[in-house]
Image (cartoon, rainbow, N blue to C red; front, side):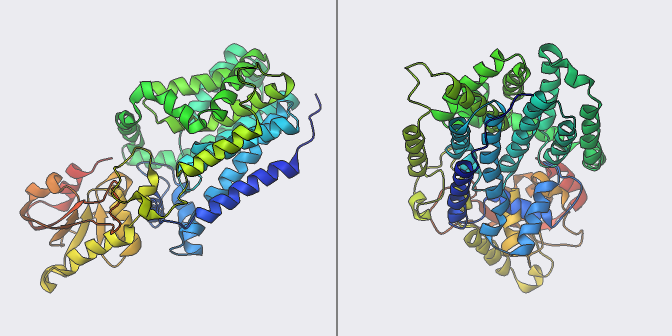
Length: 486
């Protein structure tokens, strides 16, 4: 077993701490992101599974919300810790590849200046926590290649079990990785009982979620088709890799990533990991996945590339890329590009919607919920007594749940559609969104307002109409079954 260079604990932890301090400083700048509101709402409907995800994120959101109700900064602490862990794990991966101080810092710095990690690290989201499980898993596999310690394979099973409670993407990793090992080696890995014991742990932990999915008609499969159908926003298959490179950091991440792929494919003991990284990218691209689905394999490539750069002087044409001036300029460019909510929310006013500008969807939720409250309170008392709020999107439903819990609110969109339906004895409906899916079931449909975040910021729900629907002629159970969508 070859000896490893010393872990550059001080410098690596300093990079991790700097990232954590930056993310903490901006955590409370705007407000809840739409998905964060949904995770909190889902946490108040705890279950073994959801139509659109496994159960861990709603549980984490509920715990943080219970610690500090209404605090966005506290809600995002797990996300900050996840990105800090990703920085350290990238450095440890570089060390496993034989990288010393420089390689470890290059790998850690690549995570720190990646818009994919830094930008999503600002939010509590599956796209923040899921990649960390991938990085931990690849670290354990690389370490097993060096040590052949089967305890690492059991640990890999436990990490997989946790990762599958965040997102099911790790199934794709293992499907590709096992085939890669079969063809590229080390085939000894497939003969280790610990690998299959770890797999059994992952399966057993996931059984309750699978049972929930089976009992509810496997909505996660339909969710996969929905995601594939929405992939056009990212340019579809042609746009998958370009946007993946943008998320990796354009220059630093892309160059180190290519160097890492080359290094892994040239190394007989690590070739299966290079093939796995390429195979995972191909799998998600062909399946219509989102570009950030490959984020979990990027630190593996950066670490391998960083170790290669340290051992072998790069060619002159790209030698300047893995240097600290380029890293520093990349970090400055990210801040100037508003990857994090550093500037006032007012800078978004009157600007057109841009793909990937998630910060807009953190702005103005209390004001928009106030519009829903106003529409509800404008109902005559005898009508308001039995009225309910129904939304056509799950973000607005979640916002109403958070900022106006006194209103009886429901939604037939995404996972919220499984949280319950309005009581059969309810009357008028304050409907937020396009009512066409259920309007034919009512005798009267009247537009009474729209959502306004009071900041003149164009986002996904700004300007959403509010209607009052009255005179329902169809049972809610029948109406819900026909209107529910993912």
